[in-house]
Length: 369
Image (cartoon, rainbow, N blue to C red; front, side, top):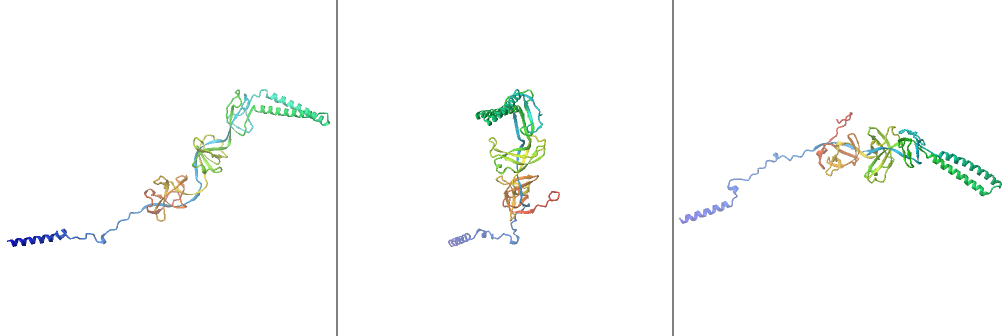
């Protein structure tokens, strides 16, 4: 019996050693198999489809950019006429709003005793002329001393000076137009008493007329006298002219610079103070004419367009809007030749490869095909 126990113990130990040396998958009857499908059944990863975009081939052309400013009409010359003598107004021969020629009387003041003073000095001048003539003849014959001749000449010159002064004072009793223009306002009436220096009338020169605007300090360096421009009035009329003045000192309150566009032949009914939209044509630069819908903003907030390079990849290009024509814009900042995305630019990003489709040609009626 003892021998059978030893045999059973030996068999148990051998069995345990065999189980420990075999993997569990083999003990359970499981075999490791390659479950991968055959190579013929494996599908390659699908490539992302390219985004289609419309692209136009644009060529830069010389164009004159425009600087747009808001302005108002203003006479080229306005003068406030003042009384040079004190006195009562006797006559106002020109109606307010009427045109006058240079030298025309605007207001006549009471001359009082001035005409009589002029006549008196005229008579005295005639007397001094006779005295000097007689003294000169006697002096030439030796019957008159040279000092007497000199005294007669001095008296004559004094009489001439006094007469000239009296005539000028009499002339100052009439306020005259210094140039041809329009009597904008008459500030006195017959019977008014005016003192020296009082305003009596406002005279404006109707030609030329000015469109006055203020240019920002960031753009004033682009302006110079002689540049052409146009002004669109509030009633729709367009006037052509040239810059005659660009200030080089900013106004303290606004930090802007005064700009004057001269209109050489304005319409007769053009009034001062009318609102105008001023467009100043700057020197020509190369620019592209593209639809306004092509503009986009980049992440930094810059305005520009999206281009396509030789590898059909998207690139952003910042631009400057020079001027507008309806729905089209003239843009600078692009290369001479540019492939510009005009449709689909909002669905693509920087560096992305796209499917380029050319922009269809325009029809004869101006619409896209």
